[in-house]
Length: 468
Length: 163
Image 1 (cartoon, each protein chain N blue to C red):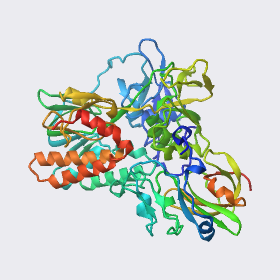
Image 2 (cartoon, rainbow over the protein chains, first blue to last red):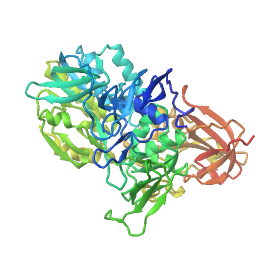
Image 3 (cartoon, rainbow over the protein chains, first blue to last red):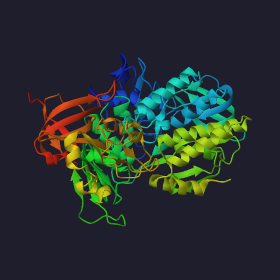
Image 4 (cartoon, each protein chain N blue to C red):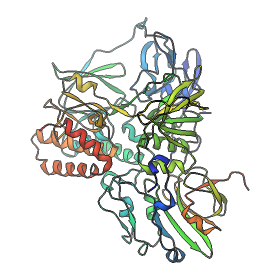
């Protein structure tokens, strides 16, 4: 029922069917699916429970950044099932509360060490564009990616991109991702997918990586962090109820795995993410009850709003979600009007019949590894949170650590691609190559993209966090 | 300008329209891109340089005298904000981008929707131009009796099981 059979933009190559066991029941899954996706497609809503109050939890981020879908897999607790590919015969069960140490013998092989010149953490648009620049200049970087496939959030962007020809304007994000991934393969760039970089040890300059059960210690001359961003949760009653998703999770479900997140959706937030994903929900055959936006004006591009409105989807400004209601899944949502100081207007609540709430209330740069590495950080609301202080060439306060993409401040994929290039050219320069021309050129391209009204905030933010 | 960032749609009075004598000669492009965003594929797609923009963040302006109504800009615009309008033999025609399923067939009667998704009449599909090889994304041309609707119709609703 949750499977998308036909789609105007996408064809789903699901692969053959296999079976695994979920709490003693046989679950049939497609080879291309992750465990959480197979379970959701088969109707599961409750993926875990909170450890103290035993509140039901559903999948929330679907890209391995939160902990809502953690389960016990083959006896091992705390496994992020949203990014774990299914395998025949797997034993999966929910863990209620904190995970317990496996009782039997679980085989963890001894750690392996890797010596690298450049290591890129994150295989999204920023990381891949950097990797391509490195390889084209004779340096093979190691790319580490947490998800089963490269491409980051680009692989689910079915809309055509804005910008100019150089950044692929008019081309769908999925095509841009495809081209980049092909290039990475052609250039034979070493990649570790399904690999989580979990810790950076500044004493030894070591990056700890887990690929499945294998601990890998990476020692690299240079590190480029292109770790992206995670979805921001907002406080409201019932925000942990299954059926409340990060909007990006809904996009992952429908555009990568061909699964409908629900039947009738309330979208919270009318920035570009909220508007674009609402439209993509329509394309997936999901009804969008409406988009609510706390601010008095739509924050995303007007054209994205117009695309939704002409399908009759209401966009209600100065309004937000107050409560999600349901037993083990969202059954209703209560919205409330806000005054110009964002205070609730008494008796303005309205109850909507929806089974899904999507939050598109902003992203937070994923900076934890950089903080561990000892890079100086600064809070900038214009860049969406704490970000590393950097110079104009994206070097942090650590000589061998660079940043690119959303981790340096939440922006667009087009700017992430350019930042990846810029960081790569900067590192190449440090390594003694003459890349001054390319650095200038890339910086000019970035300036151009940020020169309009939507770039004003970013430029303000950069002023706060750039040193020279 | 109307308060389009509150409502999510434009008012007819916000827009530049070609004179009726041009519209009666051939299809002409109209733009509903009114916000400064970094984007310019429409300019690049125009074979007769009829779209002017002041830098990548500029707003597109169409030289209606120059426009030949080829529809390249309608097909390429990432914001689905370009349309073609025409009046021929007393009937109104609009070409619009469409990325939903099901696609209508040529000759089908469809509901005509305005910028708020409200039904404003019925029309006949007279053209479907598939834009990409591997998607159903198309530029659909509808024809209808009330010529004043060329300024209003911006979407269609495919009526299922009507045949």
